[in-house]
Image 1 (cartoon, rainbow, N blue to C red):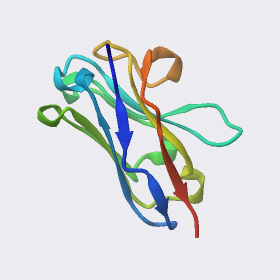
Image 2: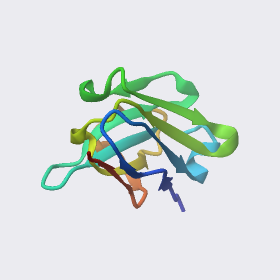
Image 3: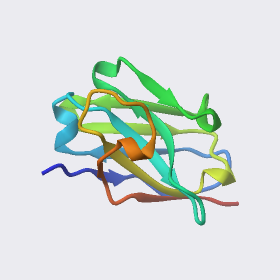
Amino acid sequence: QVQLVESGGGLVQPGGSLRLSCTGSAISSDYYAIGWFRQAPGKEREGVSCISTRDRYTYYADFVKGRFTISRDNAKNTVYLQMDSLELEDTGIYYCATPLRRWTGCRPYEYDYWGQGTQVTVSA
């Protein structure tokens, strides 16, 4: 059974930083891509950043390029999303997910197994 658990969300002021963590057995094998997605109130879920096995491919949505960094530590069974220069529009629930494939892009419908999410709130 694939289980993913997100942590690291919270309340932060604009311009601040947070580091999200996604932990699970699907990560330790370095056999599956992992993605970060977010969903703001009243909006559809969207891809934020995704990483393939062996870090061969990474994807960043245009709205986070230069601000967010994705990385994976297979020894710790964890994929991180470092979020800097946070903006009000970054508020939402952040989910990690895996498609149980090495790489498939960063569209939500391509990912099959999801964590429960962690809330990120950017507010002054």
